[in-house]
Image 1 (cartoon, rainbow, N blue to C red):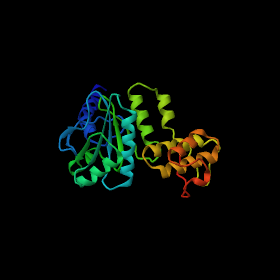
Image 2: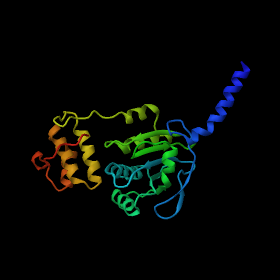
Image 3: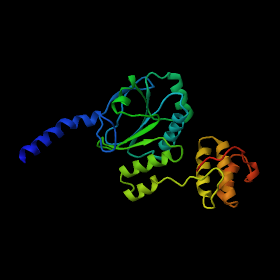
Image 4: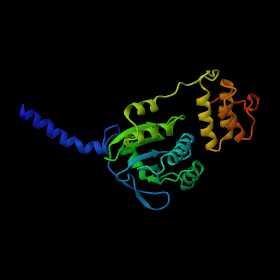
Length: 251
């Protein structure tokens, strides 16, 4: 019996270092790395004593640009907290394209360059964009694949949980996806979701999509004050006929 336990302990000791080099998943420990940055410096991937949010993106990909916009939103919402955010792109990507994406998205966090995709391969990631959230002990808390709606909300909730600001119940509630509306459906109780989507798009400077969302909110609730104010902020009076005619986004 003792010999069996000793063998298990020895096997565990041999496998432990591999966890730091293998596929990143919840509970795995990751090692820090120094990577060249877009600004010409060389920077650590992980900041000590902080929750780390690392966004892997790819040049010239619309989904990656949208993920960077979510990152910029998270920068504003998490300002002043013990969290470090960084973006990582393949070092082979054209620097001009990367700079244009970062500028368009409004990202202020460091942009690191993954030489020969070594980090991406060592962590065995399989898609772009993707966010890896690491706690203060360098354990992976979550790997968040990209989603168009509520991406920053999910990242922010996970960071707040790791900082002890919310409990598991509140985290689970924040991560629960909202019911998606069908293109032909505007449910009576969905005005708030449309307003939230409109506010998000307006903050990004995309009034066209914001107007679509506000108009859908007014169809659900014609007296919704926030929707009227949002449309006025985009220079349009709050009437359904003033909205663009393209298909509605899903809140």
